[in-house]
Length: 179
Image 1 (cartoon, rainbow, N blue to C red):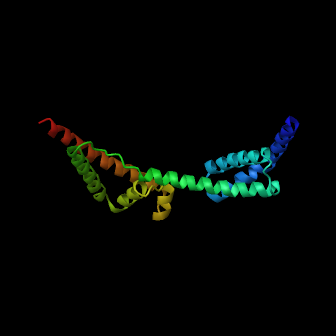
Image 2 (cartoon, helix red, strand yellow):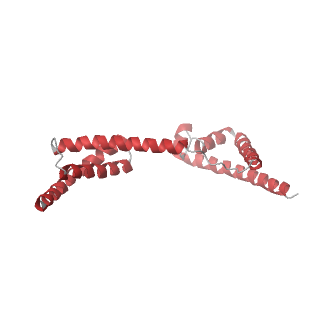
Image 3 (tube, rainbow, N blue to C red):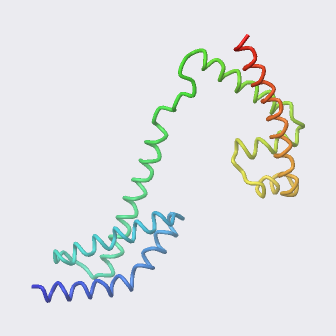
């Protein structure tokens, strides 16, 4: 019995060497995620080892690997989808513990929105693409037909304007609280 297990482990090592990159590349091509590809390889070979040691191989090893890979990849993608949507459905943390703080938070948000709206049109567009649409400088530059350096300058000037006005606003709030 132990010699069979030893043979199985050597055979398994050979299978792993032959197939691990193929399984990885297949999963990566389908998901574009190195994490999912690595996880798929691990699970496929764990399952294959279980099938070999339980003598549960009904078809060729190649067919078994392909079938297991597809099944496990689908399972992992479903898990990731569920995990992502579970996180999105969690209640969002409240930034303000009471109604007065919530009101101050809303006022602050309104102040920031007004400051952004007062920026020159191109600077406002660049800033919104960066902060609200999460585009990088190259993507913004391509979309607006400007250089990435120009995008960087617009972001820096927008932040400088907002910080300056915002710090004045915060100083005023601080001052008013202690009157």
